[in-house]
Image 1 (spheres, rainbow, N blue to C red):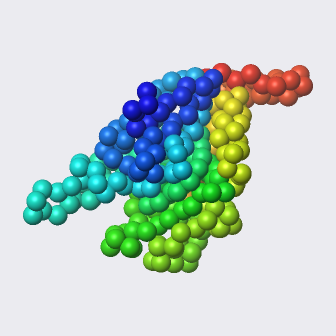
Image 2: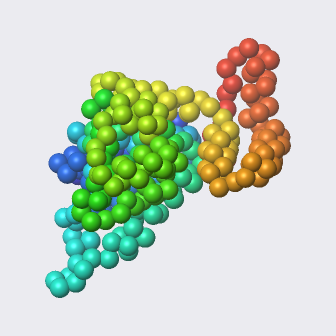
Image 3: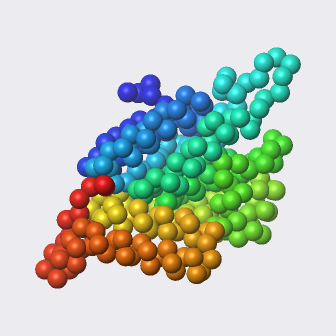
Length: 265
């Protein structure tokens, strides 16, 4: 429905989640957090869903926290507990995106700022429209980057760029974000959703066991030693090699046809 803060479009094999506060550049409120959590939970529970696409309505992707949200406004004379807001809303969101056993694609259609940048970067694949921009403006309001930004940014762009970006609060255009390695690809504005949906369709036809294992392997590699990662790859290959998707993939290869994989188990 149009009044929903997150629109859910169920497609064959994937779901499109659209942040829907276009007049506020889709900035987060507590209501929108709860709606997005519910939409992600439902997507994960649906075994036929093999990918999730997140984008924004209007000219913004997500401008971070709506500072006018009454749920974060303190009582007169008090100061806000922003740590509680992170613990209640943002930290669970980032953990959810990173732990979901299916690919999450962010289609950044416009402004991404603050936690909106983290929302995109916590996804598995980021596509950006040429009109998109990325801002880390926490320093301009006396805060520190959050929602995983201080973890994700140095790993994506290197510590020198991450520190400088956070300390200057500059805005990056889409092409610069691509050059830095923040996004997978920049596409023309009018092609963004089509490109993102093509990825989702590709994943809908892929092995869900393989996609989940690939996502998990890269996630734990951040903190593993080479020896530990080699052991993990060995164990996963052993497990997957005994599964039905591998058997189907090999059979399809030998029979020179496209494999037909099932849903998530």
